[in-house]
Length: 144
Image 1: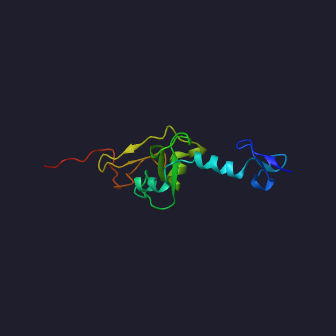
Image 2: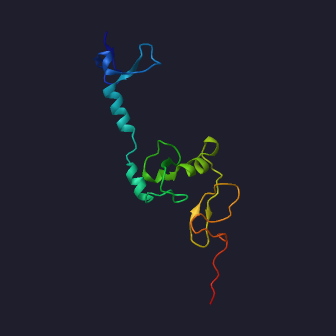
Image 3: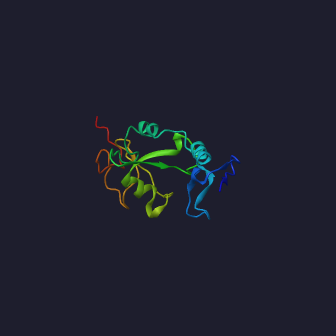
């Protein structure tokens, strides 16, 4: 018994449809060819390597080089490299998704000594993670 794909309107064998447990017949509604074309068209045009190059293969928050992940700023449907940020696993879960969602209230801190910007890991900020200065909130004094 053949099945008709609603996209291409062709009658095809059930083997040309992917599996779907939720469908009555156990097969996808669309043929594999149409489903692949749809998924290919939806994909973000930005290559992940471009995001890694933009952030120099380092976490945008703490500068780590291990366990890097790409985070979508805003909706995943928004395309372009400006909607993606590179974060390490720890920063991704502590700043981007604390409690399972994006933290809109997370405050960005700036070191007045080295110029580094970061999101705090905890409730209290003691040192700049980049220059390790305890006086990150006070500018350097010019001794003349």
